[in-house]
Image (cartoon, rainbow, N blue to C red; front, top):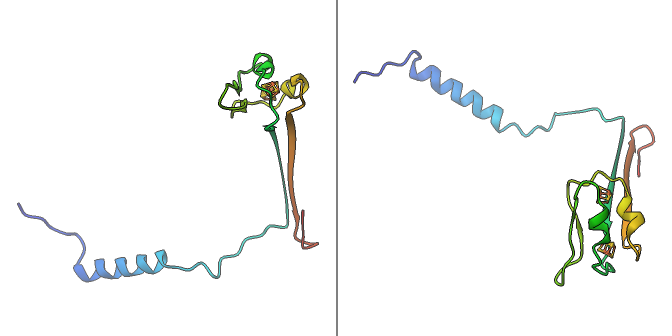
Length: 112
Ligand code: SF4
Ligand code: SF4
């Protein structure tokens, strides 16, 4: 079988060398602008004081709570839509809505 290359070996070597330089670029001169940034995430979490009654599991409209058993407390899963029905339902207030906020203002040099 005959194999022919469209490019000369010298030209291929130069291309590879140039691409290697691009790959090993340290990115020191890379800049981006981030003047203002705000992010907010609400998380529903169950505290260890859960008494494993599973009332929250029965009330959740989207089946987002893994039931408690003798080995583990109830657990909120990713299907949670944060309606907070379980927060109202729990007889020992073991379920909380945690409001996680991050804001950054470049002008103030402020981060919260
Ligand atoms: S309702 Fe409260 S105590 Fe009962 S399983 Fe859910 S988190 Fe635990
Ligand atoms: S907040 Fe609503 S959707 Fe999320 S686990 Fe509780 S009852 Fe289910």
